[in-house]
Length: 156
Image 1 (cartoon, rainbow, N blue to C red):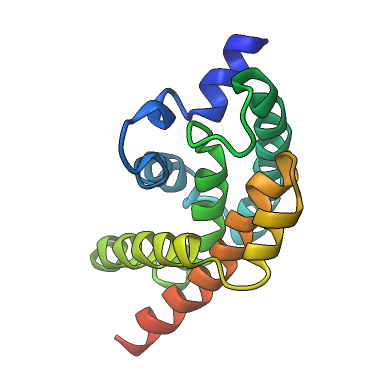
Image 2 (cartoon, one colour):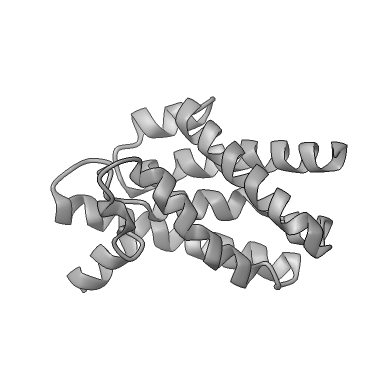
């Protein structure tokens, strides 16, 4: 179980990247998003909620394994946040020519909001010291990034 938790928390080892592991973890989320993007929106949402709950559990257990609170090695939270960012994007912009700009916009907006941590992301990051705190700040960033991504893609 410890091996599974470590692999999941580090998203296959990407969390061990020596620089910008959160950014690398977000890049690692793209293949999962592409696989899930073919789902209907309701099924996508159910899958993201289930994945987020799994990420909370894995992150909390990984903090114990690594002996650190919100360890930089834990990047499954970035994966969950990116999946939230991309909610509805495939359905709203189904043409293949829109896929690359949508991925780039979603990626950039998610990284921006994950770094800036506007409210309530900062609250979750600072006040919840468990697996939920590790993940919920990324979910909050993902909500902001999702709105920004949809707005920019509609304007373009």
